[in-house]
Length: 249
Image (cartoon, rainbow, N blue to C red; front, side):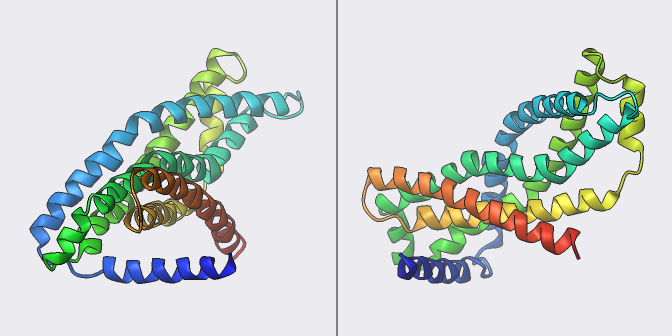
């Protein structure tokens, strides 16, 4: 098992060395990039929006339940909600959801191309298939995922604002006061740093799982599952490392 792990790390590193090279034709790369942004980014807005609104509402309700003390000012509920959404929920939980949606998409599409010998055909024609197929996917993730996370943070806070006021847990005025009180822009920057790291993890690991498929349709399904599992594990590990390095520095 340990041998297979290090062999996988080596194969992943070698694949990335082929991916991050200068594209042969930039116009083709730009067209592929726009298509990947639409497939992997724009199509994810809906699920991110719905998830963020309701999770923001849930975080507010749970926070209000735990801070239901007359000695604690009501706006502390909004402060706790803001920090929870900005620091952890939007960058990490949403990225885990995207690992399932986007990661499986990347792995299955590349795996299908591998088992149908389309990738082999590109190699025969002298095309760097790794660069041609994978680089636009990774760059699309790096460019669009931060936009999704900013949207998630905004909608999460709005969901908490609406839930708190509608359920009578905290007034709209106190929510706005709490959202603005002692706001630290660095926390948003920290969330975006994690988002970029997670975007690279999702794009590269999922692409590796799909690109290296051997076999047939069954193996493509296994590769999609492996892509999601490995991406999620890598995100959790990266979350711990980045939190320790950035917030405890």
